Image (cartoon, rainbow, N blue to C red; front, side, top):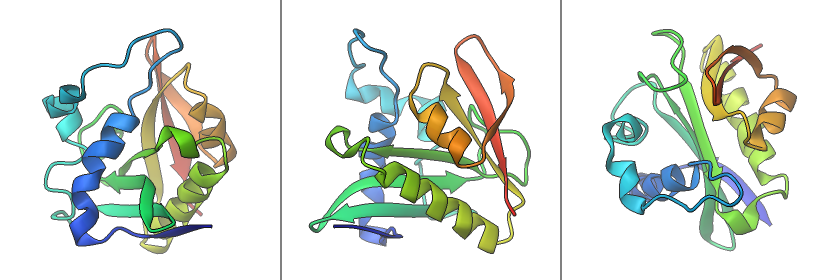
Length: 157
């Protein structure tokens, strides 16, 4: 059974793992080295997480192990659209994907952000990433795009 809950302070270092897992790797392409997460444009997602008032994170736990995370913060990342709009990132370990856990994480985060008074949340996702369908089902709409990525926004009720 999987439980969705707030991240604990001692689990914040796990976000490095989930940041790496969030990197979309197309079929037939080799995964980049793990050190890629040290790049500045990726560190913005995790550096000093929990120290900013807008930092939010939920994790999925199964049999005592954290298997996935969804987190948001106001940051100047690929999906940034406004100074009052948090950007979202999420991932699950590969063996736990396609089981509905990601959808549950996403919906719970959207609910949390709404309860905390946010009007919308944004993200950036590779066009080829299967997660695009999940984001659309969760209420995200494409508001911009590059050659490879969609910028998506979900207006919170």
